[in-house]
Length: 374
Image (cartoon, rainbow, N blue to C red; front, side):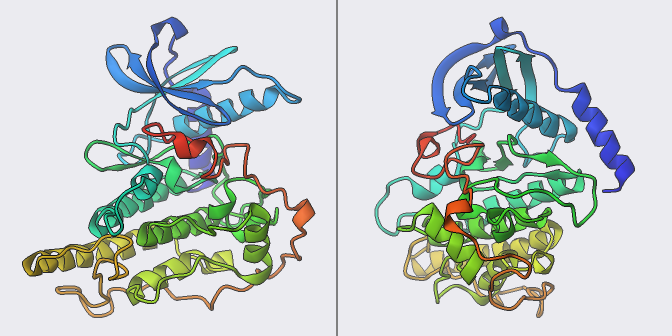
C-alpha cells in the first residue's frame, strides 16, 4: 500500500466508528475475560453483538489501557469491511466507559475448536481446519493490503461464525504502518508461542512477523497441539531466537503442507511468503484435503487432526491438481538463529506472556469460550 493510501487509512481511523451510548448496550452474559477487560454477549440497537468492556484504568500506567483501546479502534476503523475480519459496529469512547461493539461469533474461537477436550482422534476434520486457515490468510492479506499489522495473530484471536467462517479479532496490538516493506518497529509484543524470533528479541520487524505467527497456527491445526508444551516462556523464546527452535512437524505430514509451514516460520523474515502467496498454497491444500476426504468416505473412514494419518490424507499431488501447483514458494534453509540477532538473555527477554494482549493458553484466554477476543 503506498503512503497516500496509508494516509487515507489513518484519516478513516481518525473519524472512528459510530458512537454508542453506554446506556444503549444490553449485557446478557459474560463470555470471556482478559488483560483488557471482559467480553459479553449482548444486544445493541436490536442486534446480537459482542461487547468488549474495558477494565477501569488503574495501576502504575492508567493511560496504557486508553492507548490500547484507542489503537484497537483506530486499526479496526481504518479497514474496509471484509468477511474474514471482525467488524467494529460501534464504540463507547468516553472514559471511564470504554467499550467496543463487534460482530458476535457464536461458534467461539479456533483455540476452543482445537483444544476443547474430546476423545482421542476425534478432532475437527482437516478440510474444515484448512478452510478456516484459508479464511485467515485471506483476512490477513486484506489487513496488510491496508497497512495494518496485527502483531498478535494466534488461534485464540481467530473467531468462527455459525457458518464456520473465520474472522480475525483482537486489534489491541495492531498498528497502522506506512506501507514500506521494511518498517522498523520495536519487538516484545504478542504471545510468545506464536511470536516471531525478531519480535521475541525486541528487534526490527515488519508484516512478515504476522506470517510467522500464521505458520504456527497452521501447525497447531495440523497437530491439534499447543506449541512448546512443557516449556516455560523463557525456555521457548531462547530456543526460538538462539537455537532455531520450532515446533516439530510430524513425519507423516504431506510435503507440501510441511514446506508451507517451514516457509512461514523461516528465520530470515524476507524469506517468508506473503499472505497472497499463502492464500494460493492453502487453497490447493484445501482442494486436495476435500478430495482425500471424499475418497476416504468411500472407504468408510475420514481423518482428523490427531489421527494416525498425520494430516487427513492430504497429498502433494492429489487428483486434479496440476503438476507443480504446490511449488511457487521458494523454501528457505532450515531455521537457524536470525542474522543480526544477538544471543537472547533470559533475564532481559521481556516475553509478553501475561499482558498487553498477550495472554498465554494457561491464562484467561483459555477460558474465553465464545468470546475468543483475547
